[in-house]
Length: 210
Image (cartoon, rainbow, N blue to C red; front, side):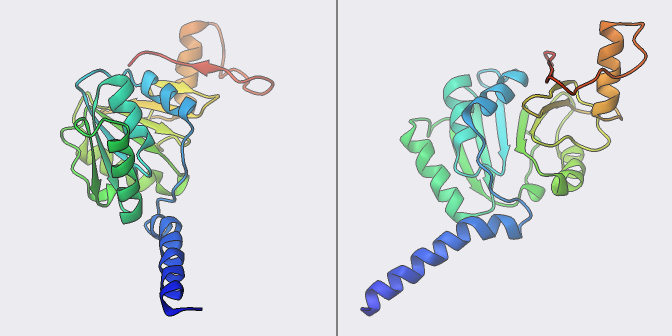
């Protein structure tokens, strides 16, 4: 094999490994979010035109594009993988939202979020506790945080979509968890109900506007 082809092969292999392993080593594995789930989350958080939206671990930029193009937000993506940063940057520009969306290379646990109206995260249970501490320190009162796939321990959400596993919080969140939210929601619907409704058999989506 010619040396140039061997070098090209090695570079491509290194790029492929970096695409998957840099996020994993940082504790934030790359898992793409499907378009329907993205839209549900952005609708659930009631994202408004002109609001500042942060995607914590923006991956290939698909959430940034939806927030900027479909909701008119000023979208900022934080991503630790250089390759994903490049992919997100290219997708944002190809989508025509380069003036509304930007991508920053960095660690989400060190990101300054004081200007955020809304923060988004496709979460994993192993990162929930560390993320909770960072969000509690960084997000201002009244800011909203929407988490896909995992709830935040010790925080009671203001809205839950159980079918899509989307959890909405308003800062500062009251102490509690999803269970306490469901009990509160059940009590408001049926004051005589003694506990949490059964969730087996069919999924029930519970939403409230934040």
